[in-house]
Image (cartoon, rainbow, N blue to C red; front, side, top):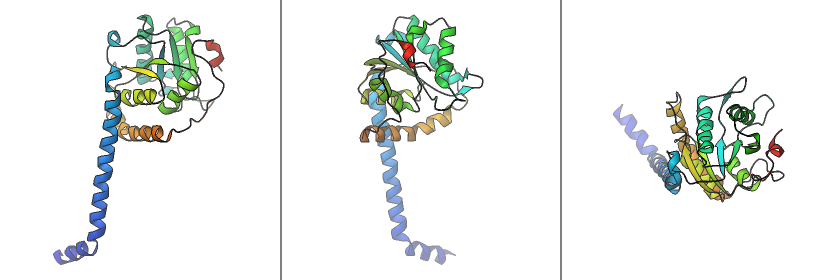
Length: 228
């Protein structure tokens, strides 16, 4: 048996060494890119509302909604954190960006209904129906909604990537972590973020085009132009 494995190793030694070196290289790249994304955004991320610089817009990133139109805990916490910013005078407008690519799934109108139910003026709530992922949301915030300065609101695991993308696309962006409870899937989300940061780094590197752009709807203008 020993001789069998020894002969097998000798026969495929070059391939095994090559595969090992390639695996090490890929691992180093994953770690390096994650560190770049994290440290490029770290100084702009906050956990307390009192520490966040005043900005004109809160960019609230979409997340799963439950039928019929009920936000998940992750999304509800993002909305509540953004509402606290609004009530504290830290922001004037909301840009609610998420997935509304299908008629039977609508993150942004669920977000809007939640804020209006809390007493937010409809004139201060803008909807981005084509925020299919974080990259698309940031590109569209800059190019479609003409946002210049913003506070990005999302959970701590997601915040470095979101702020990294926002600043890479030309926004003077800061981030507020919206964690308000323990999330059942947090370990999975943190693990998935390792590959999501690599994707974000690549999108910035190639200056990827968003799925949709469209007619500009300035965040300083009429919010109803963003409604469906």
